[in-house]
Length: 534
Image (cartoon, rainbow, N blue to C red):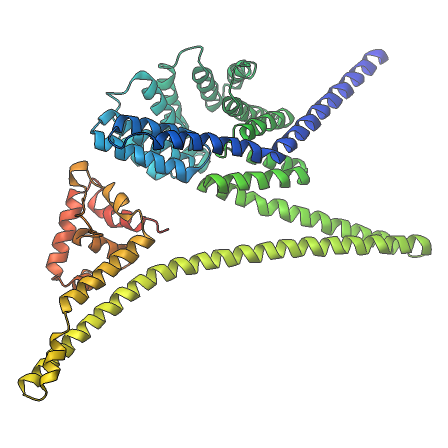
């Protein structure tokens, strides 16, 4: 009996030692990957530059080739940089529109949907996906569409994380996964991955592990596929309470993400969260900083919020530990005050810890102050831009009114035969030219602050109803009315006074434009206000 107990103890100790050795090995490998991450990113950038050079050689008239070039650049950017991927997705839409190709148009819209979803823009993702027609899609694109819809509902379920909405969202996501699985080849990565994901979502953890372990043992997986598999499988172990195994998998996923230059990732963020809960503040702090850098590099709004939520907790815990060490040292100092030699040593230690604490507090305080200053400046800058344009336009409108009144007064004096030169001076004032210049200045400044206004405005219309400007025309009356609304001037009477139209005319313009839009009338102006400035 004693021999059995001894063997069992030896087995437990050896297993624990092996697990710790594996953890240390993966931590060291992850730290090395983070240190050399810039090298992987540079390789990705060079690959993208080569694609851009090839795209630059495509003739402007060869629209199918231009579409394919934009598609390649989109794929290169979609997990690396949100803004660039979004830009190429929009170019895909424009090129498909120029080709008048419904299949390419829906493909471009689907690619745009992935980027919107990766950034946490759920409403925009749903609006985009709902406009896609599947009847002309091949099975491969239909399957891709179903996985996007599944991820959309799964992400909503995770975001809400309640007992009311989450189950319904999970059910909808699973239904779309079922549709996708019917189209995937049974031995493909996608079939095994989404089969495992489906089983996780419906609570069949053992079956999910079977699919994911098969993928983990596949040496042909790309770094990105390995990261997806390991990260998703880790959630299965977290639900089973096997945190150490989940941490090992998240480390593997984070390493693979770095080597594939994937910035749209949750693996290293989830890893930092688990290590924080286990009390490993040093590693948690290092990895949450990497997660924050990736989130800002990619431009993922949702990920920024997630990281920003846990970062203060980690930093606060670090400060609490320093404070705790400080209190412990002070307690020891009080106890051993009678021992002079030990007292001197403890005083030195205390002062060192105090200096470290003050330095840490100073760094945290300075970082918070800088962040507050940045936020304040950004807020002021945005407010200044909007208010400056409104003020500039209204000021010039008032100037125009004053000039017109001044001209009339001069003409009265001339009619009274007072001074002939006053008439000549009055006639030199070209009111129409002044007004045109005022509108031109407004158009130019407005488009400088809202460079994508016309493109985003046109996304709310069918192709045949989009606004096409004349040569050398910056804005027309339709666009100018809603440019003023974007600046915060919603009163039709003010808009009419600025543009020198009647209120009825302005309302007629607005009604006509809204009726043409594919957006409901009651949402149109709200969508206008969502158009971002630079």
